[in-house]
Image (cartoon, rainbow, N blue to C red; front, side, top):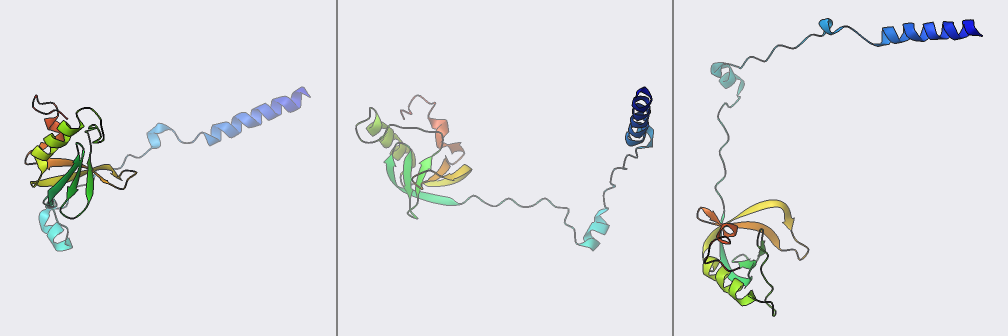
Length: 147
């Protein structure tokens, strides 16, 4: 019985030593790729120029629904990301928040920027609104922004 156990142990040891693989010195590290000279890339039809960035699309706000929701000229409703204003029906400062958003955006050309989610549960577009160089959410930390 002891002999069978020793033979099994020896066979397992031999099998494991062969299945471990090669030594680290035999691993071949690939050489880094050499860049293609521009004359060759032109012959191959490969562009070496960086892609052009699309110009942002402009939209016009025609109605402010409440302190964090607007309607575009196209008819789309947009919910602002980063602002959670009081609802218009009876909440404190709801009227002030709506008026401030009207003052900032109504009848102005704006740019919309997407985030991870496209729409909310009411099928409103979820977007950041940019006017010029500033996002609307950047105004909320200024003293005159009450929303």
